[in-house]
Length: 210
Image 1 (cartoon, helix red, strand yellow):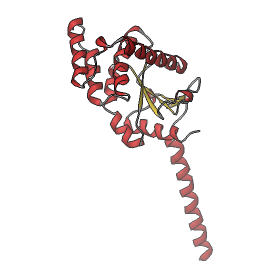
Image 2: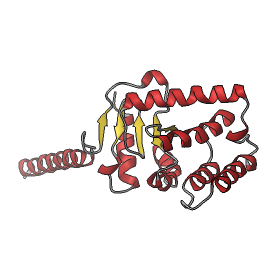
Image 3: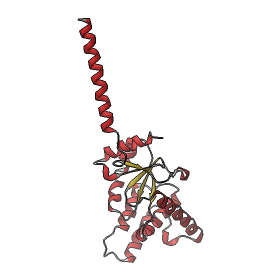
Image 4: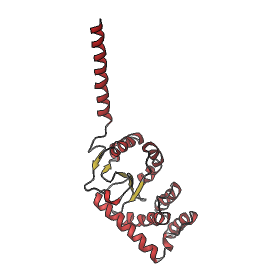
């Protein structure tokens, strides 16, 4: 009886080990599906451990913005942001975004971000004057100088930030947003995920990678 009991216990432990290994294999993100290594390391730029790559012109980025607080809560990380500059529209939008970053010296809060998204993604029939008025209003409401009213020194500082963002964008070779850079080494592939929890799972996994 003791031998049979010992064999049963051994079998149970073996099954638990097999099941555990299978679960881990299923939950571990897959390279090429959920993430990929960046073509070059961006660690020298001292990006935040998780940096969202986005554009104010992108509707999906606006949707992702509402998920950021929950992702930050799950991962325990404060996300950075990198505005892409891969076309003319993105370059203009980047100037608005970095005008706020330059003055705040941090990532703008959700209220400012939503205002910027709304101004940039206003209906196509919106006149240039109306769009400018909306942008002015966002900045003035948060005690910031409108991008249209920056002095020469501020304009030079802004251009330095745009140049740096462009350099990082080109080196990362990211051409679709929204996405995330993890630890300056990996790119999360949002298309490979079904929901916010799966995105968070990949983020936490990559944060543990060398």
